[in-house]
Image (cartoon, rainbow, N blue to C red; front, side, top):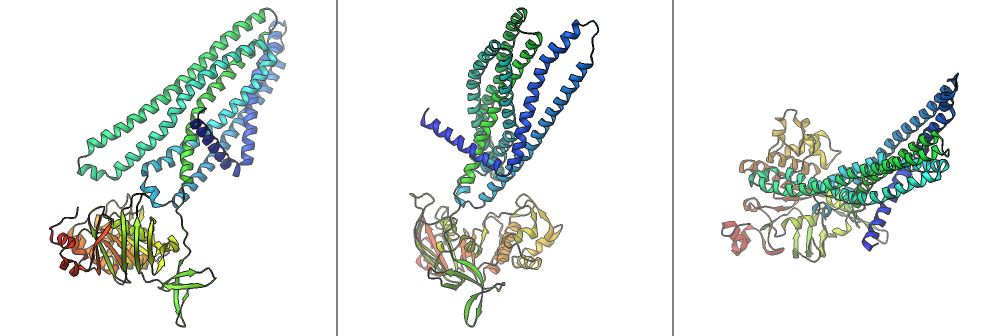
Length: 624
């Protein structure tokens, strides 16, 4: 066995053990009842076959040869066996019903664990994976687990118990006929190993291909307008056809081997059935076996080979489910966003000329800074941000920001200008620690942001992005997203501040209007106003505006810009804009090129320098 095969086997064993923990942690008693019910159900099936031998030899044959047959003992035995069969039916019902409860309970727990863990993952995780592929983990992979837990595992265990008890019964009936059956079983195992192994390999690939197809479909749905605008339909169809062909190939091969498997097993079983009938007939003629024993043994052959075929088929489902479980556990095991911060954001107030923590909302915020010697100091939150010799790259060895140094004082408006890819958005992503820098320092109110808890850091920052994310719910719920405890009056006040109140009142149900599909039915400008209202409600001391007006018309821009101007008052603001007219009044303008600040100053100073900014403003240089 190669190292790669050993690694895969070890991985499968780890996955199985981990799944067993989910099952046994909360469902030990139910699992015990399931096992007992499966054993009872399997034993009843074997008892029914044994009953055929008993019925023929002890009742039917004597009745055939009797001059005055008495059917009462026969009826009594038949009713007794009917009771036994009812017990088997009850056992089958109990274990199937319980396995549904167990499997759904386990999947419910796994889905919760996946979603809760997903909320703790860094932005980097979602930036590096297609969203449709992640969705496939929640749907396709979880569904294969459901099938395995509720159907495949019980059937395999039932088949194993049935085969063991039947094997014992066959040996007790006739050793030679049993050896004939075992010879057929060995042949079945070889055929099953070959066909089942190929089928399993393709079933695993099928799950991977489904994830790729789902990911591509999700991308195309999200970018449908772009596809239409750029006439990309034919290219997108070609790419989809390529992925779909791969999926079709893996599904076809997986099902081809799976569909061939059962007929092959059944026909080998039929061959064994014929051999047993011929040899059994010879033994019966010579008086070695009774007619009842032959009849029962033939039933044993069917009952022994059928479960073997079922096990072979169910193994495909189990292997496919284990492959899905590995992807599920990969998501659950993905490293959480690290947060070594210990400085927290608290409500504050002035008491005897000293800044102290307040239990109630005061409108004043402070950084609570515990020290190693046990002291706790409070620093008022003012929104002063400093970059000192910052170096950063999304990939460790490839830096895209070089020696970024800047200082945004409290209440200042700092704007970034530059070509696409110059590093403007990256800088704002570093302020809220979506990514961590490799070198240098970023300070917030003179505190290294690595010392500030990420939740508290982000609570103090507001963002209005070019692409507004809205969620299914009412207008009121969407504005309240950043401050769940906000009252209706606060929501309306924030909407008025953002100039969103006017259009909201004209909606069918005003603030209670339900929107779906990321704000379908609303214009880009209206969505942007809701985004500004959401930021206004949160009332952050630092605001980041990332090309917030670049995709709306000039008339709407004036309304949105007016809303943003109101929101920016008294706050430290970082602005990324392609339209230079919107940043003329900035206190500080940074011109970036390939991750470096090449010019800095206010509008008048940069115009006087007649450098890159002058060229951009006058149109001599275009932002590309």
